[in-house]
Amino acid sequence: MTLRRSALAGLAIAALLVAIGATATLHAADEAPATPPAHNHDEPVIESQSWSFNGPFGTFDRAQLQRGYRVYHDVCSTCHSMRLLSYRNLGETGGPEFPKDAVEALAAQAEMTDGPNDKGEMFKRPGRPSDRFRQPFPNPETARVANNGALPPDLSVMAKAREGGPDYIHALLTGYRDPPAGFKPAPGMHYNKAFPGHQIAMPPLLSDGVVTYTDGTKPTVDNYARDVAAYLMWTAEPKLEERHKLGLRVMVFLIAFAVIMYLAKRAVWARMHGHAAPTA
Ligand code: HEC
Image 1 (cartoon, rainbow, N blue to C red):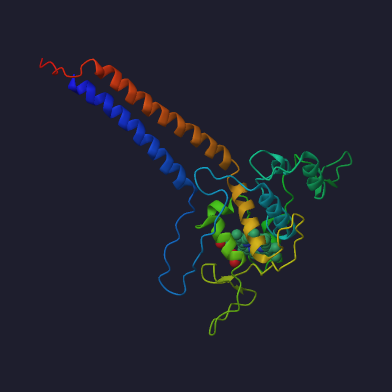
Image 2 (cartoon, rainbow, N blue to C red):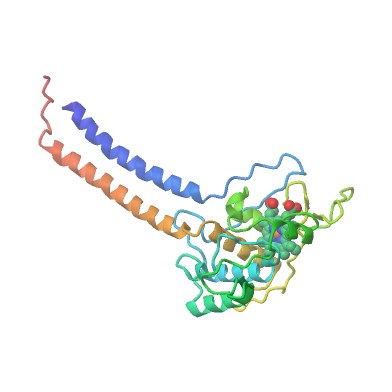
């Protein structure tokens, strides 16, 4: 009997612990991987930024994702592909949620190569929402030739592929400086304080005002970097909001379950109150 009693109590405690554990895990999944402390002045220091999508209940800021797409489209898409994205994704729930006609207009801005037609020729047509994002270069070789031998990586999952995630992307885009005395970047390379080794083939591209914002946000390099980093976080994890919602439901369920288990245990054992447990 004592065994059964403690088993029931144990179950209630276990359910509570699972609820607490789930909260912690959910939270941990959102934390950008910790950046190790800098040991010497050569190691890049990546500052943590505050993001609307952090924390177990975080959501994306729609307007920020829309601005981030603008920055990607106007600046980054000249060199970087996003092979995993289709224009229709821009209108889906949990993302920038552009209205349907805006998605069609954004897709139509891209000139796509299609075909062959019945004469066996390839032809150009405006993009459709079902098209994958237009790629800036037909193949990696052309991309390298255009970039001084360096390959601009695909950005679809970049925010998950680098330590520091969106913090790193923000730091990288705002990290261009004049090289310190005695540091001479190789020809065609640029000094960047956030990039490992501090020499990057990507030139500084952002300057205040290069992308037009229509929602009143200040068109500064810092805002461009922040918005495009948030946008890249969404492309890397388009189901983030869904995951957070599910996590919340699971937590509510587990907490309710723990309470029910506790009440059940009390009800079952109330009758035995004051009685000594039978010995055999
Ligand atoms: C003129 C071409 C060009 C444009 C435009 C460009 N990049 Fe790059 N980018 C590159 C090249 C080349 C590399 C590879 C750098 C290297 O390995 O040294 C790169 C690398 C990167 C990396 C990876 C860095 C790493 O840790 O390996 C990120 C992230 C990135 N770019 C983001 C962006 C974003 C965001 C934009 C738009 C604001 C952008 N880039 C615009 C050429 C470009």
